Each structure stands twice: as C-alpha cells, then as structure tokens.
Image 1 (cartoon, one colour):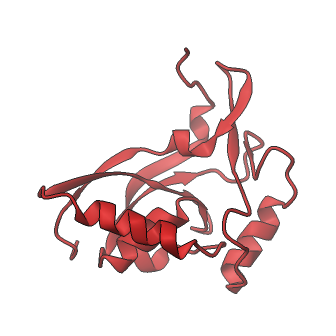
Image 2 (spheres, rainbow, N blue to C red):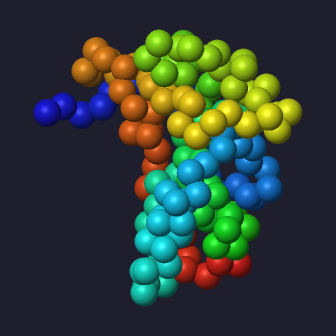
Length: 150
C-alpha cells in the first residue's frame, strides 16, 4: 500500500461554490442519484460528510461527481463543495484511452449537449504509484450543514 502523491499544482482550490455556477457534461443515472439522495437523507446528524465535486477551474465543468452534484442540488443545497483542478494539465486524462478530449468535454458542458452517463472516467498521474489513478482520489472530504439552505 502507498499514499497517493501527485503534482499539487493541479489543485487550484477547494471551496463552496454556488450550485448554479457548476456545469455538467454528462447525463446521470436516475436510480444511482436517487440512492445517493436517500443515503444523504438517512443521516440524522446536523452535519454531512461528502466528497467534493471535481471541476475545471476555468469553465466550472464537472470532471467527476455528477451524481453528487445532482443529489445536493435536488436536496436544495445552494452552495456545494468543489475541488477546482487545472484541467489543462497533462497530469489529467479523460480516461485511460482518452477516447474523448478535454476540449470536447468542456464544449459538451458549455453547449448543454450532454454525453451519456459514465462516458468519461477521468484519471490523474500518481508519482508514487507510477500509474494513472481514478481522479476521485483528488476529491476533498467536506462537512456540510444538514440544513439544505446553505
């Protein structure tokens, strides 16, 4: 087992961002989103711990976390946790084979022409493992207030 090491300059910030600022590029699987909503609602705590949505720091297009984004939005959250990434970095790929380019993904998001669910499986290069790893590993855990009107 090893820790994940990577080029830290690809993370441009971690913060709460207005839900309306975020742009999707893929459709979601309704059943998966509904299960996530039920899971979040099942907590009887004042706070909820959730992984941040990963977004391009320039366009605010989601790189990873469409279902988390949809669930939080549907639950009424006004501000959602986001990790902003340097999407232009060669340390990030759209998937192992790069069947679709980053430029195409941003265009899909900006134009509202959505790809099918799970069209991308973004990865980043880990200097410790010397492999491309799932990009969700760059997500930060975030504590949200249980109140939906944040």
